[in-house]
Length: 226
Image 1 (cartoon, rainbow, N blue to C red):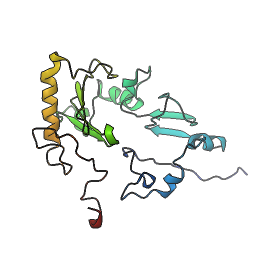
Image 2 (cartoon, one colour):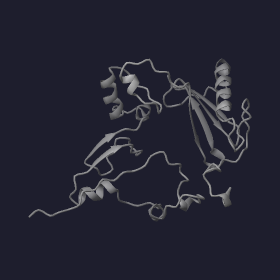
Image 3 (cartoon, rainbow, N blue to C red):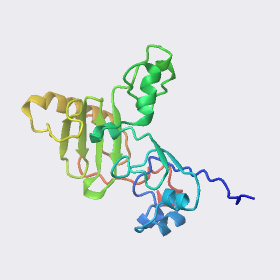
Image 4 (cartoon, helix red, strand yellow):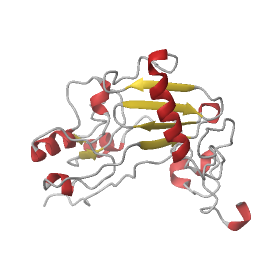
């Protein structure tokens, strides 16, 4: 009789901040098992399961280098969302499929694509905002898919990129006089986006430098840690 082995479905979460582990001092998140693997480990999950005789398949975001490295899996269906910006020959597998379904170029920023795929006239939000807490390099960015502003909240340094023509963000336009109006527009948009944040990043019209980033907003923390 063939050897019986349990089937394994490994589901990995995405969009975790780098400091969302207890080993890095997060005040709420408890990750004892991840903490035990936090140091450099020479094996990959996919490789170990493949060597053990399992048929292995990776689906989703990998964030490895090179971008198409299989990390020991027998096959990879990649959905990164930004792999097209790395200059690789093969783009995001999901984006390719979605483009075939919609018969055109696909842009998606957390909106449901069902109305778009059905041919409805969809209003998309004007900007996408993101942030990273990394000490002195803590930053916020805002983009409309054409330009992108990065604001380093601890130093006030700004970077502006024309990502429609500079996908790898190699040319900083923040000091370019010809881009002054664009810089001001994005600066005001970011100030409006950050208005009301408890860290005090903005008064609604102006960005305020030097505010301490919070790993967790206070409404998430236990009352004795607020």
